[in-house]
Length: 503
Image (cartoon, rainbow, N blue to C red):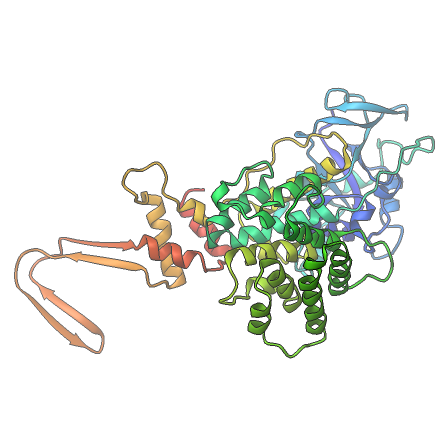
C-alpha cells in the first residue's frame, strides 16, 4: 500500500474545498470551479500513489495563467468500501478498499470525502506557498492555517507517476450537488451556537450531530425535532400529519434545491413561491392564514411599514414567526445578533435551521465556525450524509466526537450534593469574570476580635489584628447558567473555558 495518496488541484479549488469542508466533485463548486483532474471522471475523486502525473498537474492549471498547482495528501485510514482502482497495466477494476488496493497506482473514489482527511497540503515552492497563504487571508471562510503544509518540488516532476488520464476508462457520471449536506453542516454550527439557551436547544443540537439520537419526549418540538429525520434522508419528512412541520421542512427543501440555471431565484422569491404552492394543496380552512402570511411577507420584502412587534403579534405561531424573521435578517450572523421578547426558544431554533438552509456551511464566516472540534465534526458528517444520499455504500468510519456546548459541560451529574467539581468551578469563575457577569460571591471569614471599618474614595476598608481565616470566591450556579444561556462567546472564551475543564 502506498504511503501517500495525492489529489492534484489548483490553489483556487483548494481554497474552495477548505471553505466547503469537503474534497468534492465539480458540481460542489457551482460556478467557481477551475478545471483539474476531478472533471475527467465526474463524481470520482482521483488519488495518485506517491507522485502526481505531469498531465494531471498541467490540467490543474490549464484554465488560467494565475493558477498554481498544489497537492492534497489524503489519509484513507478510515475508508472502507467499494471503489475503483487502476493498476500498473492501466486497467480499471472494482476493488474493496483497503483489502484489495495493494496493486493500485490510482484510486477513483465516489465524492465527496471529508477535507479533514487531508494530512498535508503540498506546494511546489516556498514562494507559491507564501502567495497562496496570502490569498487565503482574503477569504472569510478558509481555514488554511489549520492544515499542515509542505514544500516538495520533486512531487511535481511527474516522474514515476501513474498514467493519466486513461483513454479506455468508461466510468458512469456520478457527479451530484451537495446542497443538502452543506445545509446540514450549517445547521450543526448554528444550533451549536444556540445550544446554551435551554434544555430543548441542547437536545436538538445533539440530534443535529447524531441523527439517531432520541430526544426526551417532554423536550421534543415536532417541527425542529425532525432535523434528525431530515439529515438521515436528505429531504423533508414525508409521512407526517403535522401541517406546520410539513410546511417548515418543505421550505427548507425549497431553499436547498439544486438550481442549475444561470439566473438564480432570490431566496425571498423562493419562499413566497413555495408558500403559494403549498397553500393550494391545503384544506380551505388552512389556506387563509398561510396566504395572509405570504401577503405580509411580500409586503415586508418591499419594505413594508409594519413594526417587527406588529408582525409577530399578527402571526403568533412559530412557523409564521420564523418565516417573518427570515425576511427581516439576511444571514446566520445577523440572526445570532437578533432578539425580541415575543420570540420563544423554539422560534430561534427553527430560525437557525431555516437560515442554515439558506447560507449553507460554505457561506458561514470563520467566526461562526471558530468552535473547538466543530470543523472536524461537520466535515466528516457532511461527507457521510452525501455518501448516504448517493447510496454509495462507502463507510467513512466513526465520526469525530460532536462538540459539546458549555451548558452540557457545566451540568451536574451523578452527585448527591448538586455542586460543581473543582474544574467546573475554575472554568465558571473565569467565564463569569471575563464576561463581567454579576454572579460572583466572595466570602471573607474573620477571626474573633474587634474590627475597624473606614470608607473613602477607594471603597470600604476593614482593619483587624492578625490575618483573615479564609477568603472564598464562588459563582452562583443559578445566576451563572442564566447568563450562560444568553451569551454569545468568542473563540478565545470557548477555548480557554474548555482548557480549564481539561477537554
